[in-house]
Amino acid sequence: MSYAHPEVLVDTEWVLQNPPNENRKLVEVDYDPVNGYQKGHISGASLIWWKRDINDPTTRDIIGKKEFEALMAKNGITADTEVILYGDFNNWFAAFVFWVFKIYGHENLKIMNGGRKKWELEGKDYTTDEPQFSSITYVAQPPDEGLRAYLFDVSRGIDNEDTVMVDVRSPAEFTGQITAPPEYPMEHAQRGGHIPKANNIPWATAVNDADGTFKAVDELKQNYEPKGVTPDKDVICYCRIGERSSHSWFVLKYLLGYPKVRNYDGSWTEWGNMIGNPVEK
Amino acid sequence: MLLDLPVLKKGTFYFIKENDTDLILEDKTKRGLEIKETSVDEKLNVKADKGMIHDMDGIGHWVPIRWYFSKDLFDLSAVIIHADAMDEKYTKLRELTCPDDDD
Image (cartoon, chains in turn orange, brown):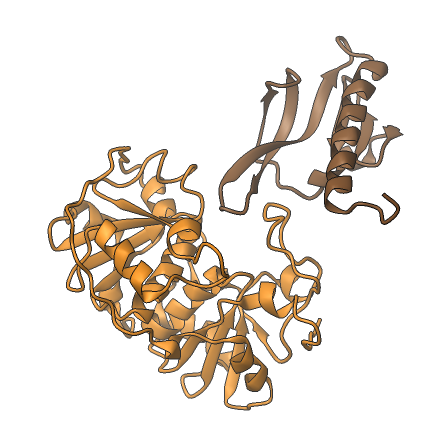
């Protein structure tokens, strides 16, 4: 059985054989470009730095439509360009950027399965040369808010039997034992635990541990359906800052073809910090 | 196990432990951080366990978790000088971010 939308995935060998050109752009999405893109990246790839490029610099939010259009122009991308995303940290941030591209209506979009992890495991080459793009215009669509869950959507969803919440964090975060690993001291919340009734299905259960590629359809179904995360539900994914949950959002929406899946990018750093929000441990 | 080693001295932000060969200075603020490599800390010029902490921009920075001072080269008083400097640095930082109401 194949994925519901196999056209959104390419493998590392395909990327090697199909380098970027006028109509195809390769974009590395990094959380930590200093230890990623700047040390080496796939030939022809440009950089989207998750924190600097895809987040509003002042307010906690993704960038607006105009900023998205400017980002596309900077990366040589038009509305018709085929874009292949890959990145560090198991493609978490590439999946987040995929989600933002979809919010602004970009159609021809793919993820390189396995990201930097698989490319490096295969010993494939990197370069430090950065591509240059001539001036270009990108016209984005109005934001598709149906892909995004906000705090009030989640609050309402708790008592709605048709809504199912997927907490993709580690079991230690889900139970409130920790709010963030020590590597991320800026991402803590005032309370530990999870949103009431949420299912803990860590993002990592959707990938093969050896190379970070996505599991097969049957394995993915087995991962979600027994926990009540079924295609007939309104699914909301969350994690700590919304990046791991966008990875699971991608799995549910594009690999399994669930019709209604939203990413709650406010995630635990919003929910666990709000006064009065109910918390389960 | 490092956890089982005898504690020679402890401060607000550090432990000094010892094994057969080293006096080990541990930074308590780095507790739980995964050790990603063990190499020489160029600042103190001794071997150190290091991990990575990501800042607000996502950039990873190598940080020492514990330092191994060879007993052949250092005595406890020498290690305490470094430990006290660390305590002072973190105390100043805490006062900067959470000043006492009396101040």
